[in-house]
Amino acid sequence: MNAETNAETNAETNAAMNAAMNAGGAPAALPVVDYLCNAFFPDRQALWNEAIAATGINVRVRRGPDEAFCDADTMVGRMDTLGVATVLLPTGDLSARAAIDPRDYDHFAMRWDEYGELTKRHPGRFAALLVVDPTRGMAGVAEARARIADDPTIVGLYLHTHSWDRRFDHADYYPWYAMCADLDIPVAMQAGTSGGLMASECGHPIGIDRPALYFPTVRFVLSHTGWPWVDEAVSLALKFPNVYLGTGAYPPRHWHASVHQFLTGPGRRKVLFGTNFPTVAHAKALAQIDELGLRDDVRARLIGGTAYEVFTRLAPVPGLLGTAGGSA
Image 1: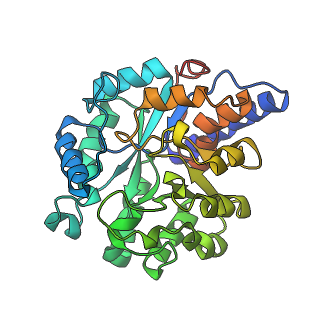
Image 2: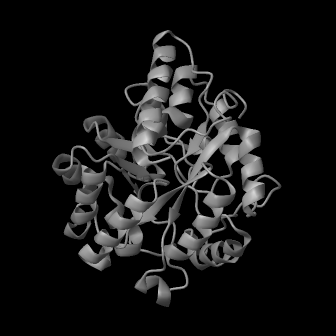
């Protein structure tokens, strides 16, 4: 299935969803999409342990039966149980920076060879967010463009902001944004403070103000709720039709009140569900969403509907439509 076919299928899915919601109900055939999940293989566990220990903060990487690092078959089994259709994985090669820094984000992302094996074994269950390396200039953009053209399962870009200490409106990113405008793909970026020992000022959500103006057709997802500048992130998602809020890395019980108010009010089509696994386990996140008391239509858009609108290359998974609903 190519990108154009995916987009046509998504248009049909969204039309059916909108018709159901306009009738006052929730679409029964809408599965869950996690827009942000790090590499989940067991070999990444040591990296997370080391990174957390380096901060000196007592944060536990989840390791229960339904939240531990695992192989692909185990992850897909969990997804089936919860009605999760597709998980989006930041994927890329190791940058020059990562080659000398064992805690650089690239080590926590999927490698292209790993991703290729995943998509062969479990078609449709995983999609890639190509990891941006702004230091490579136009050569990096050209390589990314070619890779995206060859692989319709690459559905967007991911910018690990703090790795580069560049604001969202830095000139180095503009060729990447221009490519996204040409290819009609979105950019998800970590907004807010860094969880690791990296500079955080670059993650101020206000940095997306000019890019959203200059690239009005590019869909930008401010991930991690923009914490601790949540109100700033919400205000930008409210202001711009092409700016969205992503909840990755924060369990629903700990969402800032502004996120809940936005989600249940003017932002009911502007918030995406994400886990940033292993930071939050899928079962835990979905169970806590059920505790929020959301209207059916709001919940449906949060857990998957908006993701299909933002990531238009994302193909619905045959056989899973109709299995999610309230299974979480």
